[in-house]
Length: 203
Image (cartoon, rainbow, N blue to C red; front, side):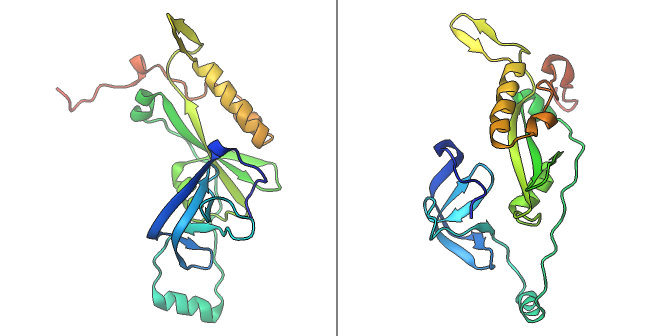
């Protein structure tokens, strides 16, 4: 079952196809065929959501046959990792691009929200962090450019503060309480003209 009852079209990518070695069912069977994905990281069979036919998919993983047999015989339970708050670093590439992708861990049915790194997000996508307990949300966050919106002729350049404030408002409508965590719209803001060091290997 999907985590939300409703998704907008912009939050869904439909009619995708895999020829194998990409996704598998939660039972561990390789999946070949049509599928669709959501902004939350969820992946389901069928070209678009079908309440009776769509099944969840996870990253394909090649397992040793001996391990599979052992798990089947001994009913070995999968041990999931638990996400933990991470110390976030901003790279020079992110400063130059003007954006950083942040990852917010949200525990279902509990008021638990904190920031994690991309490594933990990837583990969540691979279901090494239990997707039935945790949701990890990628957030497109502006970190450089003008702090406030500027108008240059016919061009409007949205400021860091305004854009991130809008991002926070949009997220709060979907995940109540996230605005308490993302309470500083200029967090990680940097002036690239002064922060990005010169590449010492360039001449």
